Length: 50
Image (cartoon, helix red, strand yellow):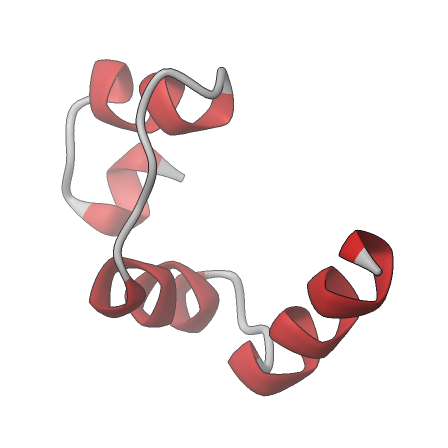
């Protein structure tokens, strides 16, 4: 994923490990790289958070 984002692996590892949070713009880029619908991801997250 780091390669697809054109970021170092350490950058990705920090938010994968919960050391760093991403902002909404980063979230959109990540969703695009993963070929995922950002709205669907947010809805799923909101349901899990209650």
